[in-house]
Image (tube, rainbow, N blue to C red; front, side, top):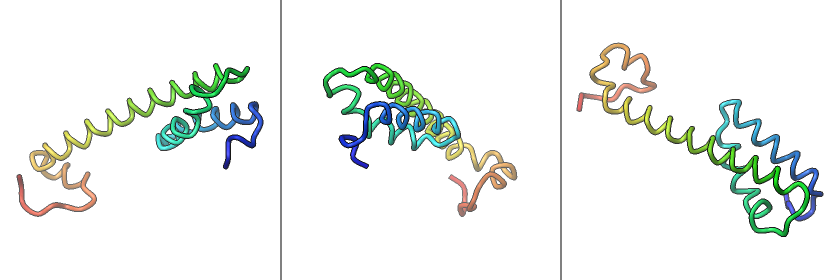
Length: 101
């Protein structure tokens, strides 16, 4: 979709939908929102819906950053301690790695 062709009200509505969709454990929508609407929010001349789009973009970026930090922390902890957790670590694993580290 070309954002140049849609009216500003529709851009705001779409930006809001992507922002709210990220709360359904779909942080990829926040990433898409930030990448897709960055130029509209920060590089285009000012228009009436732009402050709201900026707000949704900043919140989407913050949500994405928090999600990435939490996911990275969990992956690091799981990789480091899975072998020590024994049976629980095995139940949490999709595939069980051979050996212990």
